[in-house]
Image 1 (cartoon, rainbow, N blue to C red):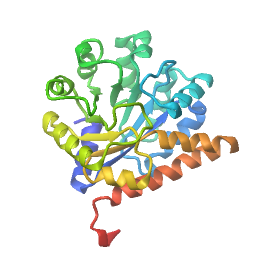
Image 2: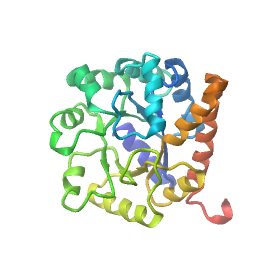
Image 3: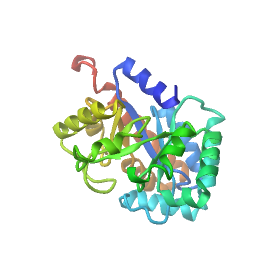
Image 4: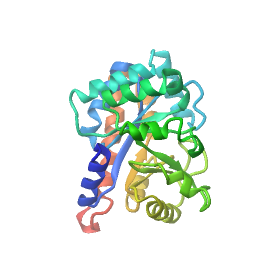
Length: 276
């Protein structure tokens, strides 16, 4: 059983949703981002999405685009991202890590070499936002063969005709993009999100994580009542950026403070009201 499957099994037994923070590898520097990633489990992260910086991040909103630019300016590469995962695994063998990014850096690195190196580094899964199911032979199927989960995105526009192909080779979990837009936008209405989660869970047999636009503790808790996981990215990146004028330590602390507050809200979401 994979790390991701084990983690969701444990959370199911605890009757709570996972908290999945997204941070950009190498933002604002390799050293600072490694510190943040190492500290996230202590701040309540159940899984970690680690962004792979790219020069043309078409699905990302302004906050994550700027994070990628800072990482690129600091010399971050796909190889250094794998090194960061390896360094994380020296201290943590339990928290699943999913790389999220675009296909071009992987293609340039070489698919076979990338999958071998990612597995050796301790990566558990991949989210590649610009590879549709029609291109599964490019990366999805080789990743599954290499025992790396391949997490597929579904959106509010994924209809009944499209859904079977989206979930067919998915593994680990399904990532529901709750708005038809870029990262950092407003999330969908609670009722619509709950309906989508139920539909995707039934179609795939996998846990469903909800992201894109979850920024506040209240919204994270609301999503956590129905979803199997809540993904928060832009809000954490914005907290980091706001702290940077005071130095990398201040930026790190701002990220971890917000992560802790979000985690507490998600953990409490399904508790009886009198226990809150």
